[in-house]
Amino acid sequence: MVKIIDIHCHLTFKEYDADRQQVIEDARRALSGVVISGVEPSDAEKALELAALHEGFIFPTLGLHPIYVGRKTDQEIGAYQEFINEHKQRIVGIGEIGLDYHWVRDPLRIKRARELFVEFLGLSKEFDLPVVLHLRGTGGEAIEEGLKIISDEDIKKAVFHCFTGKPQLAARICEEGYYISLPTSILKSKSMKKVAKNVPLSFLLTETDAPYLSPDEEERNVPQRVQVVYEEIARQKKSDVETVNKEIERNFERVFGVELRR
Image: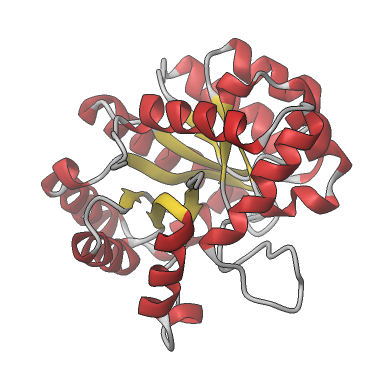
């Protein structure tokens, strides 16, 4: 049986409070690994706890989602960065971090978000860890800006999580040596399908962003639904899921420095 990977989801979120263990057990039957993202300090603690309970299957990244930037003092940010430093051996990346022009529109908060984005990129360089990027805004503006920032900061490994940009922008990202992660919402996006078709398989990753972006809008998303991304990539590349799986697995191990259990 071909097993697959969800490189970005949020199993710590309240949407799983009622049945988290069952969701993880179900995911184990279909997946080789899951990456969860700690998006702010309290969530980061939960992510580490959950990963410790499922070592070798759940891998945590820790970061600060841009929507939380305006709610944290300098002292709180400093304490959180120290927390990440203390647990750097237990994480596989810094993220999700970045820019969000959909939810964050106040000029002062935007300025603060940019500054903290660069600070957290500094952690990734200091710890030699990849970054998982959240870049959201109309017309690809946030993605363009994020690409420039990580290039200027000389970031070596980066994943453009839940990529919604155009194929031309995806091509530029890959030229810089960075990776693109396609989510389960690919089924409803012509642009994502074009990206899946045009981007070399060696630069693609797969995710759900669960509990969000379910292929069925009436249902909560779960990690094993990442299967639809593999199927769509295979369809766009006129390939098969097993070929896609092998390449995605190599990409995952290359980016996150993790060797999955067979």
